[in-house]
Length: 462
Image 1: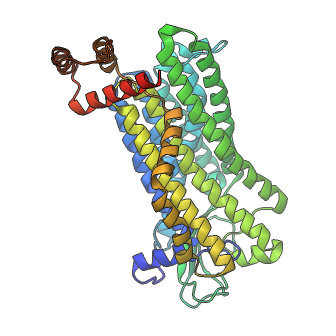
Image 2: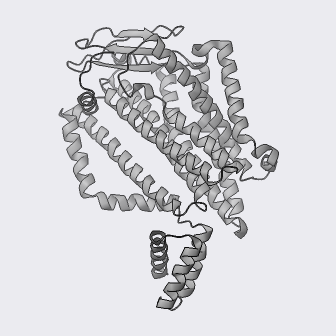
Image 3: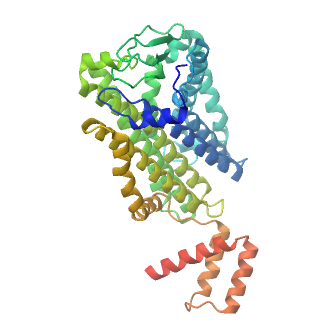
């Protein structure tokens, strides 16, 4: 491993010294790595909530497995979160992880489309048969694992998912050849260190790609589009039936989750595909060559799109996690909708702030230098001063995505409270009755206060 000195100052230096025109983007890679770990943990927590709510229910098991797969997939480049030492052994670990990543990817492709089993539409009612939907949660991962492992057995890891590379630029190697370690069987590539005084040392890992890997990169977008259309059809079909109002809300939530993936990730995937078709495959181990062959504008555009794709994995994974959890748990866990909205809003605020900081740093670095400090001031001050109005806007958006929802116990309390509020006054006797009702229903004082505040606010609006 290159000697980078104290790790925290190293991270700060690389994250505040950005220039997409020259390829100085190692700091963005580290930022993405940290955010991918956080996103993975959040998805694992949401998955555990879903399976704990109804562990024997087929739909809960299905969503639990789906979010577990997504949690694995958001860690697309965990190996670049820290300047690990490059070695054949580490590249082997990296390749095995990538095999698991593609298994999860193929599983998600099948699971997206298979959500129609729980919200059937015309011509696909057979998918809702118990023999099918009750076994999807384990059968689809088993099928995906079998397919990928058979491909690996036939074509090898490199032939199935592509090779792997380690690029190391020690101190003082600016503009010179990089130290390269290449996974056995990977196509040979050359690496050259960024020609910018003082930017070394640094190192990073590069995953290769194969025809199968490229196909599995595109297919999730198409399967998400199909699932989005299925869920929209189910939503419209169910919303007219009062007895299936809860199912209609669930289908709507899944529709939003799939629509987000199809639009956001689809845009980034097809932009990268266009760049590859237009200019050919890029050698990210040798950014100097990319700049010389295609020009700074092409290099900058490709880096924007590449990191946009990586961050879209996190964004769409988080959106899916929250929308699917809301769909399954809104009537199962007390106050889960409110908690999901709050954490989702906080995630959007933090994510938008971080991306804004990176963008501001890049712009300032291009024009005046010192991008990290100036960008922090430009972005940080407005975020602090305007924190409340920005949060209000985000909260309103979260409420549109995840409308207020109550469990059966909470609905019973609302009915009792509505009766007590007929004259707009709560007497002592009525308050005693409401407290008894809350105790019987298992509702705590904090949740009761929130329900009554929500009801009073809606009463005022009416």
